[in-house]
Length: 434
Image (cartoon, rainbow, N blue to C red; front, side):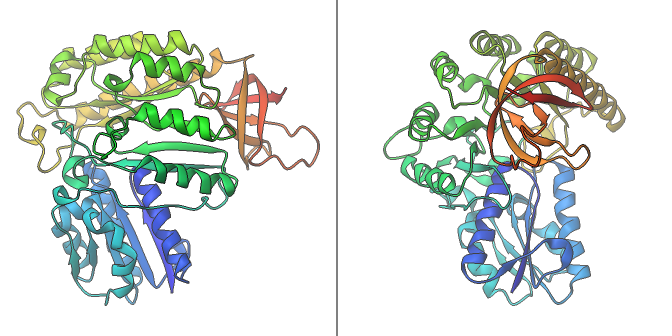
């Protein structure tokens, strides 16, 4: 059987889709690109924003329309929170597998008869993480590894706890087994990811935490480079900063969800820090790691965000030396507290504010790249750039960089080399081998 897997949303979804694809291949089926058609389509949906949910329904509808004889399986967060909308989009001919049943997805998909089938239960009854393992991603030099699922924070705007359930962690020995498998297959960098990685280990019988896991991974795999996908600022301790600054194979790259610079809005969002505390964390990170990339998530248009609250966010972002910015306009999500709040912001105003924040993000990214001109970095070479013919990769501090081969015709993919950044061109750094 030819199987196509289409993925929307976060890095955890990407990891899970890769695990599912690998399971199909182990059972003798061929995983193919979705554009070429297939006998079975798996759509791993997202629900974090209204747009992501809409895109999920569009893809289900498209596969159902364009390939009427194929089986279509929908799974993921939009299935868990909006099964009825997906059934309507597909005209009833759809197999729905919720996040609570995802560990059995391949078996359910292969047993599907192509009519309406629904395997969606209570996500809050799930107590253990699905034990997915992956092989090296095709044609890649780095991989996402999910160590945790679910979230206990219940931020007022966020649907994720209702889609993913309570926090659940992968036991450390299983994480080590996964990394060892990837190392054997040539992966040079692992991005540690989860829905809320700061909660890692709290649910395990033998209590652990994120810092203990990172220490053990970096020590056990010294030739591997490790990077964190995202972590809440309130979960970065001084001990973690001191360790990260001294660890040679932990990347100085921190992605922090700020969301707002307004104390009023942060409180309404049920975030666990103030703007001043956020700035303090950034200052301590950069004191210990001056070349670190600090990326941030920010939301605009949350209910009650007037001009004063928006400018408080803008002022905070202007005051910190960020390396890049991910901007999200607020969209009401079902089940959440924020959806019922007064003071919803007009769509036009959200678009204007988002555009302003994205312009600031572009400027700050350019400034960060320029600050690194003349500095030396470890570059993991990932691919050849089609436009320039140069090799392209990522530095340890998250600078996308072009570099010439050290010798004519040299194959540099998956090599780790020292480079010096010479210039910044077309939103990319250009470097020379050292």
